[in-house]
Image (tube, rainbow, N blue to C red):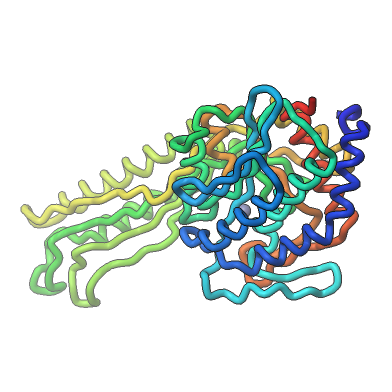
Length: 395
Ligand SMILES: [Zn+2]
């Protein structure tokens, strides 16, 4: 890592990052101000494609789900992906205009993950400026579907169905801004809508028929008694409930939404089984108490599925990322999180998530802001570039 960073080529790329910083901020504003809610990323994706096309890559394409992929060919074999996500949590009609207050720039999505997108363009330009050749191909990917409802659909396509599926050797995602954290594990989650159904009826005249609300209540009370380990951190949440017709009706249906999480596949599977056992027991209990022939049914619909992966302290990509971050003065904690890296990690592809800036805050709020201090920003970009070059094998 020291020799890579000390090389004349790298120094030239770093000079490129410095000279280019205003352009990086310009891209950040341009992209931030284009709406991109999950499932509505197309407009921003097209703009990103246009910006990428200006950089003279070997191939720039948009795949079937809307991921934008720019390939910088290597001299030998191998394929390294550097990604950032196009989508934000904000609706299309949100005011996205950037408000500049000194070094703090405010706009929804400006950190998460528009700074990552602007960073991809800055990295391409720095590599071109220095005329760098890597042995592996480097694919710069602006992907769709990272935020909640997207359920990682961009990454699922890239790794599962797209033309590069099964041919990606290493993965970086630049997400958020925090350079003091390196994500090497994946918090997995299962999310459900569970609907209890019965015949319904009049609260007085039909009293005695199976009541789905009773089963739901018993199930939720059972959830509260589940025990989970602190390490690996495992959690469950009864998040939303609803249903029924009126105060004087036995409901025909009631529903509850549940979020289960763990970095451990074993714990997540165990938790999932406990939840299902509780649902079954609650339905059986209500049916037993109720008039014959009025039995409840239940529908378990999985609305979210992100595969887990245990945190690793070292390994391919992780070692390069740690080395580069430390060399540029960052002190990253190793953590698990729920990101686009969940997909490659679950497939055994070496992967990390790195931040793409110095500081900021208000992530996922209308008050989201980013610090545009050039020194810290250039240092962050240089660290990311060094990590990517170490993995892609500068030739
Ligand atoms: Zn993000």
